[in-house]
Each structure stands twice: as structure tokens, then as C-alpha cells.
Image (cartoon, rainbow, N blue to C red; front, side):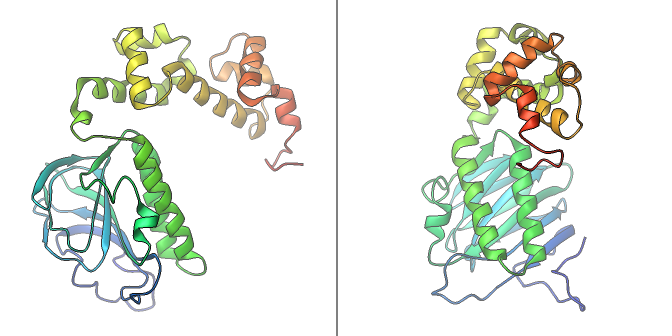
Amino acid sequence: MSKSSPSSKPTPNPDFISQQVMESDYFFLDLKPSAERGFTVTCGGLEYCDLNYCIDRSHFDYFGMEYIVSGACDLTLDGTSYQLKAGSIFFYGPRTHHWLRNTGEGPLIKFFVDFTGTDVVKVIGDPFMNSPSPHQMSNLKSMHGLFQQIQETGKHGGKGCQRILRSILELVSLLTRFKAVDLNESESRSYITYARCLSFIEQHYAEIGSVDGLADTCHVSTGHLSRVFKKYAGESPWQMVTRLKMNRAGELLLRDQLLIKEAAGRIGYEDSYHFSRVFKQYYGMSPKQFRESVIFEGFPR
């Protein structure tokens, strides 16, 4: 991994970049924006922190947001301590005293992005500006993808870079607002059950034929399974399974050009007529109409 944005000659990292990292991938855009400038991303990166990694800052030039990809760490924000793990996301301001130390047996891997400007509050908003405590994401894949996009956009730079980064960070804030859970709640038995069942659904949705069968496989009661999904996902487990099946069906019909019967079989429907009924309820059109409304390349006629 590189340690700076692409250039013909390597440049030294700013003083605030830690030396306690084994590998890193950074981008630097505008480290000294004017005080009157609107929301501006200054820099960001992905760090593989060593076992002795420790940061202790009482002052910082920017606002910062960090997302834990892997590992564990202790974090203190203005005197309040937290234990973080993969999926944790936290935010701090220029005058926030923040202390972070790697506590895992392996490297702490994390994304960070720093920004400043007159409208940070407007862009970031809830839940970060009004809640200093970290948040725990219930869907790690989505948040990881957003920070990966921040990384790729920042490294590419160029026209529209700041506008794109602003939009991605607004989405990060929205996703945190609606999909994150309290750190203490993330250690509860109900959330652990939810996370375990969610992982199984994401990997095996095509094989799931009923909620009762899913509950039996996950060794929980059907009622408890439904309650934890309503609480943390905002939908029933069967709604999630159906959504994943139908999304996959759309791909199979358009991209792979499978016959309707073949697509149905791939996602666990033995009866293609039943599949077509569910498909129409979900998309508002039959599988045949769905495919005919889109040309092979996937663009509208």
C-alpha cells in the first residue's frame, strides 16, 4: 500500500499521521482550506495499526470520523470510555480529547476521514453531532463499502471529488442514524442472536424455504427470531429473505438470461408459478414483463 496520494515523488506524511502502523493507504486533498470554505474533506486513509498503537490528542485541526474494520480497541472521548470492535464508528471534533489504544491480539484495521468547513453540522448532523458516543453498525458490509468508496474517490481526486465525498458522508450519517445500534445493546443476547441469524440469511437465503425452517436451523424460536429482526432490521426475517431472493432473481433474469424456471430454481422455488406470483408482488410486474422492459445490457429501452 502507498502512504500518500499518487505523485511522481513521494512526500512525507503530515505530523498528525501516526507512525505506529504496519501498512497504510492515505489520500490528502486540502490540508489548509480557508476558514470561510464550506464542507471540505482534507484527508483520509486505511491503516493497519500495530499492537502498540496508541493515539492521545486533546486538540486536532479537523473533525474526524473513524470506522473499525477489524480488531478491537479502547476509546476515550472527553473522559468517557468505550470498547470498540469491528463495525464500530465514531466521530470527534477539533476540541474533543480522544484517546485510542489497540487491545486486540492482532492489528487494528480502520478507515478514517478528516474534514472541516462552515457546514459540517449540516452535512454530518444526527447522530454524530448530537451524540458523542460511538455507534455499532448492524450491517458491516454496507458501511465498509461506503468507506472504501471514500478511499477510492479521495485517491482519484479531480473534478467533483469534494461533492462526491460530501454525498458519501451524508449517506454514512444516514446509514448510522437508521441502522446502528447502541454499543451496550450490541453485546446483548438478542443482538448477538440477530447478528448470527443475519449472517446465515445473507449466506444461505436461496436455500431458506420458510421462517420455521430458518428458526430451527438457527436454534431459536420463530417468535423470538421475528422479534429481533423487527427490532434491529425493521423488517421480518421472511421479508429480508424474500428481498434477497428477488434481487438475485432480477440479476439471473437480466444478466444471466436464465429461463424463468431456471431462475426460480436457483433461489429455492420449485414451483415457477409460485415464484412468478411472488416476483410480481415484489416488482409490480411478471418476470417476463420485467425482462422485456430492459434490454440485455441492463438499460431502459
